[in-house]
Image 1: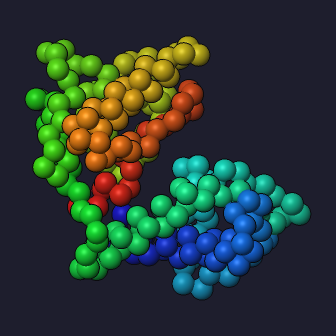
Image 2: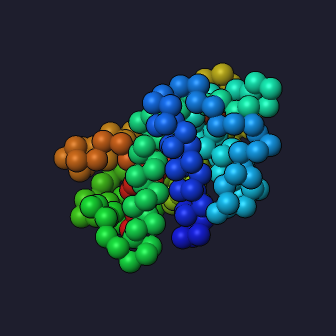
Image 3: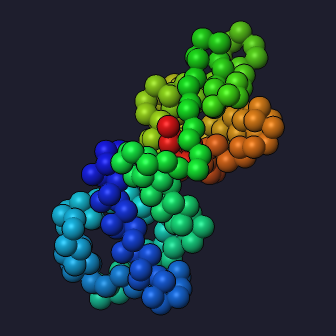
Length: 214
């Protein structure tokens, strides 16, 4: 993201954080009427607000969003929310020439199948033939480190599966778990949450934002 986009992102996050903290609750937080909320933020365009707001819903930072007479209520995953706020603040600080506590450099050699995180070198594929873990990681590095990838997309793009069975998603989930475990062992358990992934055919995977600060 550009500095401007990140700053807009933080405006929205801070607005939601203020509403939650003022009420001292993160479940069923009322943001106000859907036609008014975005217009109340003077430092950001209304359309930009709603794009960011819906992207946060998409990333499951909010456990649920409900409406009542046009008012928006949120159940916020507090841990994910504060972590996201911290990651965005760190990234802004870095782009403005400041420093953050931890800076990560990432690269993936798809030929040797070696993931490098700072000074750690982690072998993902140990055989000659590609495995699913290798293919998932290669796809992420080739298509955008800051992107979220859905299992349905990966099944089609990596494995060529278009008509998914009820259990095909497990192939991608197992690959994500394999990557996660290899990173844990390869970093002497200094990094235990490299990937953010979940389960189910609607599941998705992405690299945790804090590891994209470089």
